[in-house]
Picture 1: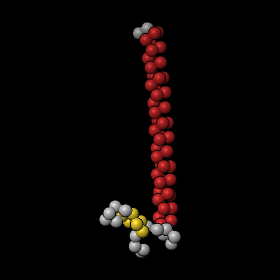
Picture 2: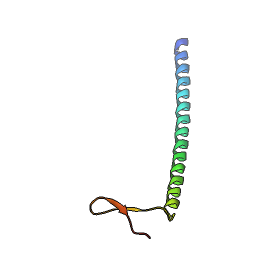
Picture 3: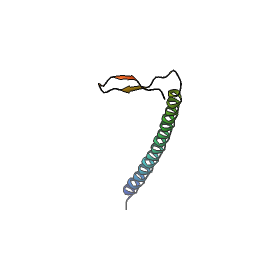
Picture 4: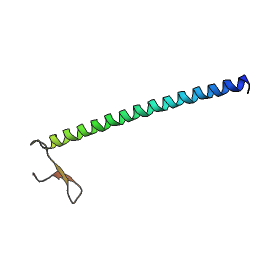
Length: 74
């Protein structure tokens, strides 16, 4: 086993470990981004539900002719 083979093996290991670290960091970042997006989506849905309860909001229903008109008040 020559010195050049040893250098190639060590270089390959270092590159492999570096790629593994990069992939691990990216995976963690993408998971965090997904959690933040889900939290934002839930907050927006909660705001929409609260806003729909206001008395000045009109709910539209689609009629038989395909036109949206104010629906019945609950």
